[in-house]
Length: 134
Length: 148
Picture 1 (cartoon, chains in turn purple, red):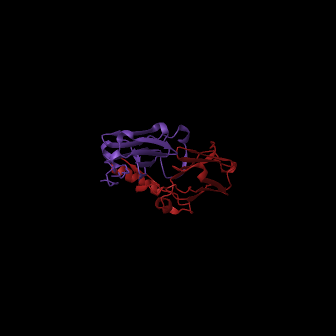
Picture 2 (spheres, chains in turn purple, yellow; picture 1 turned 180 degrees about the vertical axis):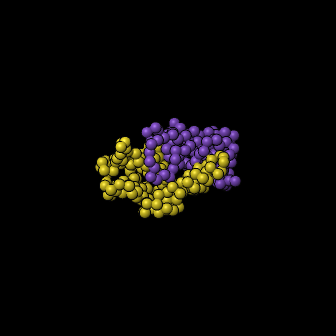
Picture 3 (cartoon, chains in turn brown, yellow; picture 1 turned 90 degrees about the vertical axis):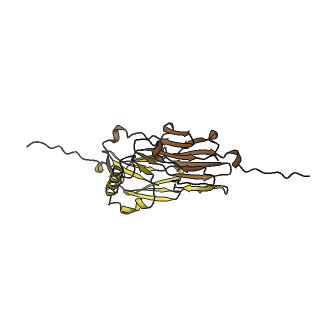
């Protein structure tokens, strides 16, 4: 089932089970936005170090993955008072349509948020058509 | 916001984990209630202690240090997050919005009778870490059991 549909099917959520890791993982919440020249995916992956972020594009599928370090030894004797999250890897995949220029996809990570830039294919970018004088 | 946790298999494992998480939520936190933090979409938080200190971890992805205000009021830690206005251009069209961009105040009652004497706070990879050193009277006292 597609969670996201755009007019050109630029970004759709793919079947998570097809390429998902075997370990338990969290699905990071995302914002997907469209600008004049690109689509943007912003995924929240707090607790992940930049070097543990993996973004792959393969056969039309964009896969984002973040590995979270296990708690260190000194926290093993901790006494929990209140617990709402546990260190857990992140994974989410999206089907990318032909309206995206796949060769120009880029990503950066800051403050626990992964941002993936998906430039629009040339055919979708707005073009100004000059009126020629006769 | 809570991200969804997925266990590829079996489904029952995840169900039990969530049920266990729900049942283990503290009732003593009067400022939030049992259902408040589950329903309001607020930032996920852990509170734990060891012999010397209390520790608070809060997921704050995308939030800058200058947007966080920490206060200690008696034995309460108040975490206030004031988001800078979003710089949204008119050209942007959101296709999906799952992230939360709201101001929030969270008050955590520390289970001790007097205020902590020392504390420090850091942010790393979108997680806020606060360490509050326990006053002497709040430290765990070990009692030796001697034979008769």
